[in-house]
Image 1 (cartoon, one colour):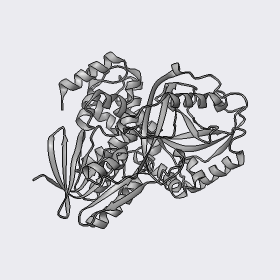
Image 2: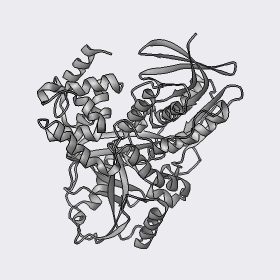
Image 3: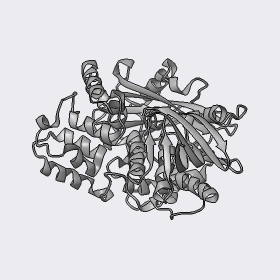
Image 4: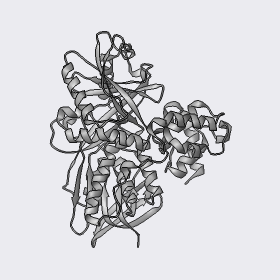
Length: 495
C-alpha cells in the first residue's frame, strides 16, 4: 500500500530540508528522500556565507539583495552556533571600480539591510590598519562591512534534524526511482537503505538541485523539459595567510570578485570561480585552470606568493541556476524560481536559491503548497531556532565558557569545535564523559567515538566522508590511516 504523506520532497540540500522543516512545522505530513548524503551536492560546496550579495547590486538584483540582507540577522538568531558575524575588507584597486562607486554600493547595502546587531560600514586606512599588512604595497584605501559566516553542510543537517524532530521522515542514500500520477495524487517509488519503498503523496516537491531537470525528465517522464543552467564554482583552502580574523573581498581584473576568509582556525579559504558546466554534476571537480585563476587572483593582492604547494584542500560544486538566457555565467540570476505544474496532481519545482534565502524560499514554497493542499498552521520559522541554537546571538562566548566549566578536563580545542558545530547539543555529544579517554576510540585531532556515535544515531552519518567533510571538517587534519580506522569503526557499528 505504501506510506501516505501530504508532501514528498525530493532532494536533501538546503532547499529540500528547509521546505520539509517549514511544512512539518505547519502540520503537514512530510517525507524526504536524498539519493546520497544530506548536503552532498551544491549545499556543501558554497563559499559558506550568509550575505546580501554585494556584487548582485551591479546586476540590479535589488529584490534578492534586500531579502538576503534582511535574512542575515534572522538566521544568525536561528543558529548562533553555526552562524557568526564577519567583517569584510574591500580594498580599493586603482583601475577597477572607482572608490565612489564602492562607497555608494556599501551605503545602499547598509541602508537596505535592516541591521540591528551587525556593525555598519567604515573606511579603513590600510597603511595603519592591520588588514593592510598582508597585502602588497600600494593599497591605501579600503571599506569594511558586515556579513555572516555559516557552516553550510551543518545548516542543512540541522534543518533536517528539526524536521525529523517535528515528525518528518528523512531518508538518506535513497533514490527516487519513479514518480507517477495516481488519481489526484502521486505514487513515489524509492530504492535505498530500507530497500524498495512506495509513498502516496498529495503533492511532490522537486528540490533536487543540479538534478532537478533529471527528475523532470526521468522520474516524471517529461523528456523535453530544460530549465537549469549549471554554473561551476570552485574553492581552494591554503595554509593560513594572515593572523587577524577579518575577511577580504577582492576585485579581479575581469570584473569578477573573490573572497579570502579565515577557515577552521589554521587555514584560509579562497574562492569562488564562475564558469558554465555541462558534465555530470556528480563528477564536478576543480580544474587546473580554476586553480591557476584563484592563485593568480590572490597573488595580485597578497604580498607573500601563494603556490600550488600551499593548497591543502579544494572543492567544487555546481549552482543549479534558473536558465534566464544570461550571456555570462556570473550574470545569470541567483534568485530562486518556483514553478507549480499539473492539474489534479501537482508538483512544485525549485530552481536556484542560496543558503541565505533558503528560509524565505521555503516560505514562498509553502504559499504555493497551501494554495493546493489548503492551510494548516501559520508561518513560524522567522522566530525559530535550529537544534543547538537555543541561545542569544551575542551569548556564544558565554555558552562556550559554560561548556568549559562543565567539562574542565576536556581539551579547549575540542570544546570550541563542539560548541561551534553543535551549540547546546554539545552537552549531549559529551554526555557523562569527563576526559578524552571517556569518549571512546580516537580518530585523530579532536574526533572521538562518542561524537561519531552521535552523528550516526542523530544526524544520518553513514560513511567516513559524511563525518569528516560534512558533519565536521576534521578531514583537513587527519591522514589515511585514521580515515581507514574510522571507516572500519562505522562499518562494524552499522546502522
